[in-house]
Image (cartoon, rainbow, N blue to C red; front, side, top):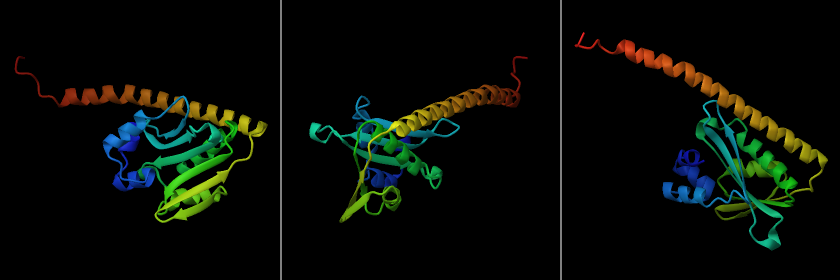
Length: 192
């Protein structure tokens, strides 16, 4: 997660966090994540690089236990493929199954991609100067949402395992081949 967020440039950090977060601020953000309470969703490429990441943060206020906030980032080279929207849909499904009835998205008004995803899902977007807040009411979970989440979770795990195995096989084949190239390119030793 740290490498993913550190790979974001200044403008992307600004859109994701609402300010141009420094490397140290990003490290503090990651350190401050509560994995017992919140949920993180990600999409990995074939090299097992985290190219898209979403954070579903549940309210710590007991009177607002039914609320959660959504944030997402996608690396520049992976944009335009719908990864942000897919992570949003996944987070909405999971939030419903956790009893969340209200999802919030805080975004800069210029973050038209994120606000477009929220509007498409039916969220009400309120603009307050340079910032906007989207509110999405979630219907209660049902058997379909639970089964769908279970299937999607299992498919995501299988996808990751296939990518991990493929990467291990690739590394096993490519590394020795590259080592052989280095040996062939080395000049013969003078001791011969």
